Image (cartoon, rainbow, N blue to C red; front, side):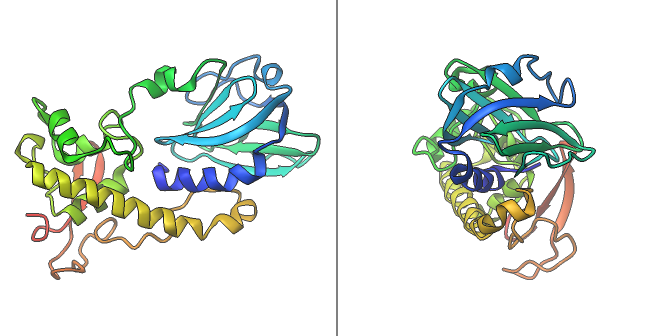
Length: 271
């Protein structure tokens, strides 16, 4: 599933392509993705001018003159701008009509994406109200993590992937951030110290900043590649490297399953 750096890169790719342009309708080829599509979406979008393309956690927000389109790409979704009249493929489930000549097309083979319209403040929408702070926000501190962990019985990696704890971090960047912070992903949250939580905040920001910087190199190819999220050849320290030597100490990188997801870690650097 695309995580914060991938969604931020897509946001940056879409922003210059959509800002100031007028939506003239929508064409839905399915009744629902992860959630039902609004039956009147093609009508409510007519005449909506895109004022900004924003991100909250893993959600994209098309802020328009008449409301906000909230999009989540799910496991396999991606967006690409094509010329009007371009024949849709098998998994091209939704077209947002842009001006008279373009289409913002959502391709989603697994149909786990979400597209919703709201005329209210999008940050009051149920999907967004429960999200934790953004990783780069001043509110994300070691003290915040310590407070959120109080009384909870779960492993630190599961805690970090909880979108109500912090927004936008998924499996890949949780593993990478915990390695940088030197914290074993199996550690119960109540055993992690304030100093370690402070290091974790720094690790999260450095790993995400690196991934966003790598993603920036893909922006010139946004239209050609169809805006399909990738992980930018992330210079993984542990993720996906089971059995390989740790780049710091040389120990074998181990893997285990947590919450149905693969976790990668160094048993010595993250003791």
